[in-house]
Structure formats: C-alpha cells, structure tokens
Image (tube, rainbow, N blue to C red):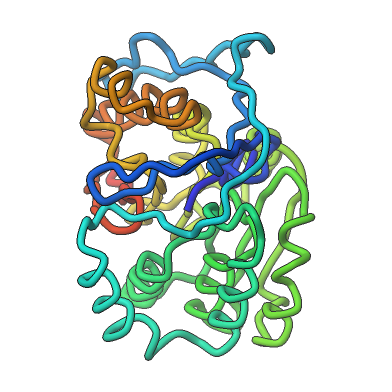
Length: 311
C-alpha cells in the first residue's frame, strides 16, 4: 500500500521512513480512494527533467524546504486502495482467489493491521498474493523490502522464499513492525528477516559498500516515499542481479497519474496525493525510458511497476 521512509512513506514504505501523515476525508477517484491517510514525509524533490537516457546517472534531488512540505494531521481509518472501480468485482477476486489461499498468520496480521489508523499503508491482499506467485516462479531466495509498516507484505515474501532465504527489510523505525512481529514469529519465518532501522538511502549506501551485495538480490519491493524512488533506482540496479525484479508500489497513485493539474484542482484531491503525483509521474516516465530494464506497470492494488534488470 502506501509508504515509510524506508518504507511506505519516508525512505521506504510511505509509512516509515520518516514521513508525516495526514488525515481528512477520502475521495473516490475512478474507483480508487484518495485517502488523507497516505503518509508523507517529503525530504527530497524530483528532478525537473529526469533524463530519458538510461545511461545517464541520476543525480540526488535537493532537500525540500520545511515550509514547502505538506502539513498533515490525523490519518483516515480505511484500507481502501484500489484502482478497480467495481466493489463487487474486487470482492469476487479476494473471495475466490486470495482469501482461500491466504496463510493463517497473514490473515491474522491483516485483520490486526486494519485496526491501526494508518492501515492504508498496508499492501492490498490481491497484490501480496500476486507477488507471492512471482516469487515462487522466480525461485527467489535473496530479497529486499523498502518500507515495511506492520509487515504484511514482508510476511507474504517470507512465506514464499525457501527456509534458507533472506530478506533485508528497511524502515525508518520498527514501531509499526512491532505490531506484526508476533504473527511473523508465529508463522516460523522470523529467522529469514534482517531488519535495518533508519533511512533507506543510508542503508542502501551501506549495502553498496559491501561487494557481496552487488548483483545479489533476486527480488526487491519498494513501497516508500515516492519522491525518493528516483534516488533508490540507480542504487537498486547495482544490488539486484541481472534477471532479477524490482517492484515499485503505488505507481498509479490513486489514479491521479492520469489527471492534469487542472483536473486535480477541480476534484479537490488531498494534499498528499497532489504533492506526490508529480514524483510518481516523473518516475513512471523515467522507468519507461530506462534501457537497463524491462518494465510493466500492472493495475493491481494502487499500481505496481515490475522492472526486470536486463544489463
């Protein structure tokens, strides 16, 4: 679902890398709920002109001045985060192909997470199931997750890799993960998880300093602060193996990527959606032009872009 500084919101899942969150009402946008509970701790700005040349190194973006960051208050209590406009069809997908195969501890964690005010940051069950199938098809063993929140997608990954598989998980702090850790332990997969607390950019730079992690990862899931996706990307390309996958979450961003500034103004979209929309649009353009990867934007959950490293 949405983001941590390392995680689903700040440097990771917008939820935890250090972003602030917001509250308010929720707006339905083409079947997607534009929730004020999306996390938002903006620390950088996207480059004005991301190069379409895949061999051009992406420069670090500048820090956003404090006064330009969107201010947030209370989260909205909702887990609605989908592009599919038909509620009935979404329920059919969940009831017919997701919930019947959902692990007991995944269900336990999902239901526990729903009680949290920031539950919009949780990955959707259909997306988690989709990624589980991908992991098994790939025979993935070494994985990474940037943005953890309570650990729903983290647990889904841990259940899908072999017993000697490993996940390096990052988040700005582990406060939210503490909520889900009992379910992870109960599932018997805690030994697969290496949690790194702090900003994801810093953690990635530490990993890059160790030769053993170069071309090491089979799969990397990014559900964090959208303004840093473009900074994560060049680092992740050095860490994922050729043929491996990087999955960027929330790349349809509540459907706002298809809207003009005027349309967003007319729809009175939440400030968080409006603030991050240009970053997501810029990242989507950049990925589409990057010859180092094969990519596909899949309209599941809030949109997830799969990037297979080819060189």
